[in-house]
Each structure stands twice: as structure tokens, then as C-alpha cells.
Length: 322
Image (cartoon, rainbow, N blue to C red; front, side, top):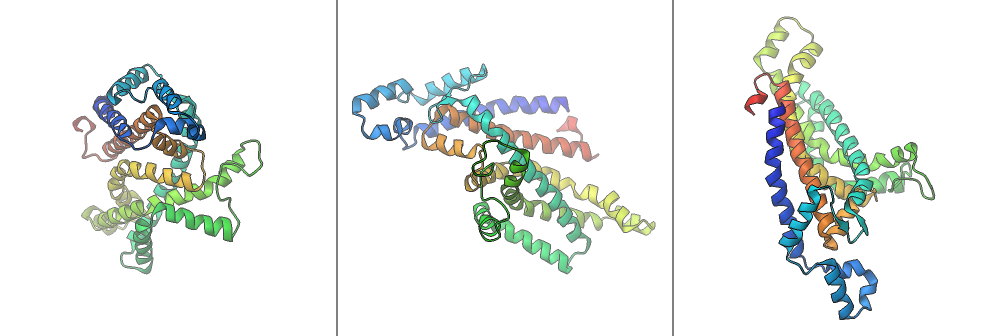
């Protein structure tokens, strides 16, 4: 296991280098003017000399390769630079927001995996039944629905029509402190929407995996020996049927991150979504590079986790050979 983790960590280094270099190259080609974004409304009345002096202070006219190398050498020592749009160190800007994004993604992912497994197992037990057709039809419908559309529908139904849940934010309006109760209440809608966007994949994978496992000879033999249906399902079919789902965990991380950005924007959740949008429109090189590196690292970590889980649960796979 240690060798696999070390090997993947070494392979991640060139990937991160290429990704961060690409971010600086794309940002340099962006039509947005970082100087006007930094100055805000003050840029409307500023003369060209002032804008040129500000451009020189920000260093935006330097070649992007030089800026990338300067940022990279500083990042290795732990200095991620200064965000021009947020007017604070990049490490502080990310640190203040990553906790809430992580909470949102973790809760949504856990709900999607657990509920998707339950629905998939129930559908696989009786293929072709009314329950199976209902679950699969619902899964395919949700799979095609954009996450922002689901988010807007949830706001309309639960916040505007039924008035049972808040429409957005982290705490109640007028509250001067963050409490666990308020956070939990405001988390229900965004986490639920994000979980629903990931739910179809797990449901369909579990249904297919468990359905195939129930038709295998070992499971038929267990039934022939007189074992109960619950024992056959939980002790034999479920374990082998869930193996394909483990590989799905890593592949869903990019979609989870993208969905989280959209959900955070709709529900005004104080995560990294707003910082990402502001960094992109203001061509904030250090913040863009740090956020992209973070997202890339999360995807690589998800793929590694999927491989580790697969190797630990499937006796046919050896971690030393991966």
C-alpha cells in the first residue's frame, strides 16, 4: 500500500506542474483586465498613467511563464501568494472557505453513496418489478437533469412554496454568530441537491452489480444450501456487487467538485465557489493556480482512494501489482 501511495504521489508532481502552468497560460490569454478588476469602480475615473503604474505594481505585464515560476517556487515553501481580488493571502482565503466546501461535499457524497446503495439493492432484488422500473426511471431522469435546475427547483419548492427550509446562506438573517443548528438547517438543501445529482450513478451501478452477482453460481449455490435470502444478499451478492462502485468513487470526484461550485453559487454557500468565479473574472493568477491545484489534487486523491478500496476488498487484486 505504501509503495502504491508513494508511486502515485510521484506521478502527481508532473501532473500538477502541467496543470498550474496551463492555468497561467489560459489566464494570460483571458480577455479580462486584472487591473480594472483590482481597481473596481475607481478604474472608471483613473487616467492611463495611473492604470499603467498599477499594472506595473501588480506585474501583470510580465510573461506568464515568469509569473508561474515565481509562484511555483514560493508555493513550494508554503507561500501561495497574495490574492489581488480578495485583498488577502491566498492561503487565508482558501482556509476560510475550504471548510464549508468540504462539509458540503462530504455530507452530499455520504448521502448519495448510502441512499444509492439502498435503492440499487432494492431494485436488484426483483428485476423488472414495479419498484425496479420506478427506481431506474427516476435515476435516468435525475441523471439528465442539470444540477443548477435541481437547485432552483428545490429553492422554489422548499423555501418559497412550503417555507420549511432557508433559501441560502450559512446562518439566519440577522444572526451575529454561527451555530451548529443553523448550519445544519441551512445545509439540508444544498447538500440534498448535490447528493441528488450524484445519486443516479451509484443507484444504477449498485443495481447492475448486485443484479449480476445474484445470477452468479456461488450465490445460486448458497441458495441451494438453504441459506436465507437476507444472508445470500448481504453475505454474498452485496460484497461482490459493490466492487464496481468503488471505481466509481474516484471518477465522480470531478463531477462532485463541479456540482458543488454550482450549488454553492445558487445557495450562497460560503465555500470556494465565489472565490473561484472572482479569481477567474479578475485573472487572479495566484488564487486561480492554488484553487486549480487543490481541485486536481482532490481528483488524484479520489482515484487513489478508489484503487486502495478495490485492492483491499477484492482478493483477486494485489496492491503490489497496481
